Length: 324
Image (cartoon, rainbow, N blue to C red):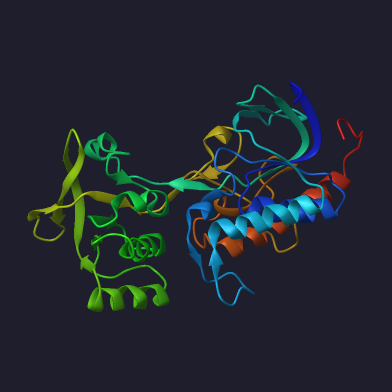
């Protein structure tokens, strides 16, 4: 790989938004380049059952879906580069991106589809036992707790999905939620309650995680607090999975793009250009700009929109064909 290369369009991120953007951009003859980031395939590579992808009646596995999407992009001659971008300069043209590989990339247009990462509570004890019984990815680390007792913290889709997944591996899994009702989809809730009635799932309502307990060997339990009475209780267990949401991967764009709570602001206009940021030629798709829906199918949809918006933008500026 050369130390410096220029492309008409670069797509940052290799999740549903990034790969969909590549398919549409390639079909528009934009010769897109995907820079994958550290986790090729994004969050779906750590997701097991995907039951809501339209057309896959029997459901499918997250990693399988991402392989299919990558192959679709490659079929149209998308260039996929495994690199991680450390810094960007969007204040001058062409845009400049510096990769961990040592390569400097420049481009006329940029689609940001860098996704989001698991969020943690920020407890000192949580960080102390990270990787030693504390995890933010049940599908990554669940295997290590086979036949043991664990807890999941959260109340949304991720928390319920993690609980159901772990119930097939561990001896007992306890879902702990700070409220008395879940935010997860109704179908997921139904599956969870069925498991709680007939399986190895327990649910503790109105409690928060206060501290992770452990020793030199790892986690030995957790301390939880009842949100109304303040009563403290301890649960002996071997692992705890934090499933309280995600943070958008947008840190390198700070002070360059308009954001709100870390999410990139886009126009969302009804007259087109819906994925445009405050910098002409820079577009955002997927979880970096969506804190509401956060679904694979909506990410893919905005990836399509970003590619169409980028195509329209590139038609309006000179094309010198540098590096293509």
